[in-house]
Length: 124
Image (cartoon, rainbow, N blue to C red; front, side):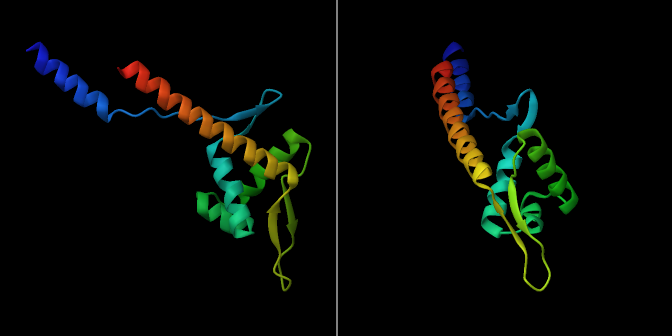
C-alpha cells in the first residue's frame, strides 16, 4: 500500500510545474508586469499602439492610459509616436523603454529558471 501511494505521489509530482508572476515597481508604484512587457514588445513588432493593443487584448484607450501612467511614474517617455493620417503615423519604444524591456525580460527569465530549479529540488 505504501509503495502504491508513493508511486501515485511521484506521478502527481512529475506533472506539477511552478509558475510565478513578477512585476516591477518604481518608488512604490506599480510600473509593469508581464502584460505590459507583452504590450511593449508588440509595439516594437507592429509599430503601432492600436495593433499592439489588439495583440494583448487591450482597447486603444487602455493602451494610452497605461502608457501615460508608466510615463508619469518614470518621468520619461515610454513611446515615441508620430500621428497617423496620410503619412501613416506609428509608435516605437523610447531608448528608456527598450532598456526597461531588456531588464525585465532578463530578470523574468532568471526568476523562472530559479523557480524551476528550486521547485525540482523541493519536489525530490
